[in-house]
Length: 222
Length: 222
DNA sequence: ACAAATATAATAGTAATACTATTAATATAA
DNA sequence: TTATATTAATAGTATTACTATTATATTTGT
Image (tube, rainbow over all chains, first blue to last red; front, top):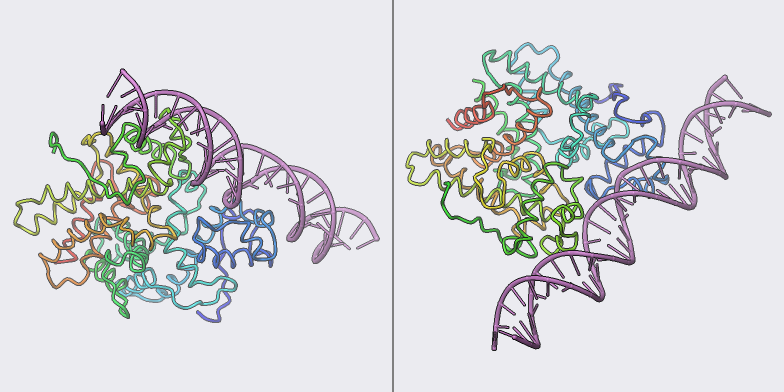
């Protein structure tokens, strides 16, 4: 994956001005990832962001209509990246079981290496997904936003992996529930393991989250 | 359960003045449940709440330090109520399998009847848990709050049910992960089924969420 | 029954947030 | 070079999440 020149392309619905199109746009995305991690989404503001990139609030607003729009953009970028990894790593594999194994690994693993997609730090972005992304869709405007296509990438990822499940066991009733449970669950378990560890069974050094979901998925569809 | 005189007792950590102790307190809790449902947590304010119960903002602040504190209170009330139902319905049952079945049902079912615990509408409260409760613990202050015991009831519920799992299969490695995955997953699936249905496999009339998690849990620990 | 204590309502005020609008300066492109 | 677009700077607004103060009820102890 290293030196491939690939770009994650984000739907124009998800920004006012494309942050890919300028240096300032890059800085906005890049620094917002850092700052949301540091401050948490609630305490992160466009004013602070503007200041810290040597620009100002109103310039940030030209790229994103709101703080929430930026979070949706980051979330979509993440899922586009995951989809890319998913497609790439299951290409030319014939065994459905093997494809599902790879997929579950990608979906439940912690991201520990910044694959340096230009100005986006995937390690930090993954942390935002774990601790903040649920705020993107837990909003009163969810239905309108869903109609506008804000969550299509995520839905497509779930769909793709559900298809692997269906290839393995065409009679299994709940492939989408199983995959969305594994994805969201893995993020939650990572959050719990750091903050509410008694809700989990994580052990230092072992990647129990991946093992747990791998086991759960394959037993459930067996 | 109907005519039993039982009270849910909430730890004093979770309020400034006990809302159980006055008519105003009752109104605050009762109306806030309605309003958070209507407006969503973001648009709900103490000012609006005060006005709508014929009182005012500052009086609400005497019961709860912040909007967030109120959400944590409501969440704890919910889990205390679930714990009560859990203990009640598994009392005198000897079969661990049967106990776990009852537990999973209680944890994953939609609440459709207001069991009229005085001034709290459990149906609406359950909806808040489904769509807003993750905001209670996805906060930068989580570690401090956890130390103060804000989440002990929830943790105890997970612990109790994990013990049923361990009774059935003492060698299963991840009982806590399994139960917290089922609990949080069920809420998520209910939210998705309403707003992002392609992430689920819900069908009108059938309670697929309960069936899905029941099947998943028992297959996983088999 | 009365004073003291307590609870509540009403009002005002503050710093910060999440924006919008306007203008000025700067870079780029025709 | 001029027109165009981009950005920075500044100012302003309604609202939020809270704090503080005082006046008025209500409850409680004696």
